[in-house]
Image 1 (tube, helix red, strand yellow):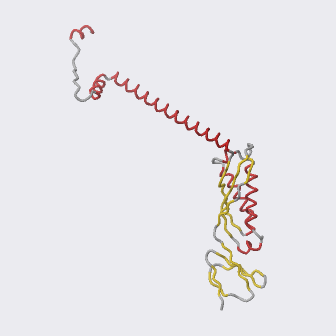
Image 2 (cartoon, one colour):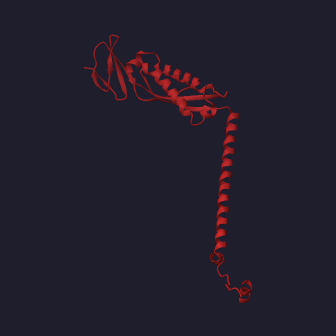
Image 3 (spheres, helix red, strand yellow):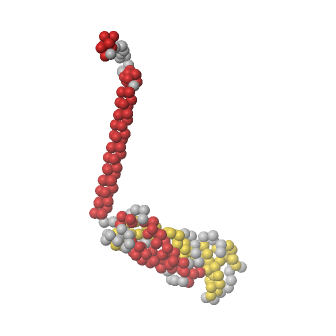
Length: 223
């Protein structure tokens, strides 16, 4: 008696006399006569698209590549719907990437707005793969290559922005220090005893400090 074992990471499509009988889940089965068994790997896979040149809405040509995370969801459909099922998903991602980036500026593509592009790519890939037995988990933009002169311009903008931020922080610190000194000076003017105490605390160790009262004649003159 011949047996067939289906591993946890695969499904086996069972044909008899050229007809689809069913899909075998993980387990051990008895082989039948005139049957053909085709194993299909159902583990998740990563496929990267080739970089393609795309024109953004602000007229900049960039090279963009994406990565698709997918797996076989229906082994029978995957074998029967098309000769190379994933090629249809691949094409859908490439087309969606070109169409979506036509409405996006290059600055947005390099920033947080990229998430909106990836959502559109994933939706297109899911729609293309579903009838072919392909389940697409996500599509992410992997690389965005911009022209060298544009990279240099962006680097200069970032450097200027950081330099301005540093100057602003230094100005804020200096303003805070001056405000603190002004408050301290006013406090000392209002409280002479505190000023004298501060002078004593600031004097180096061993310094002789003479504290005297105002002469009586000067006090009488002041009165």
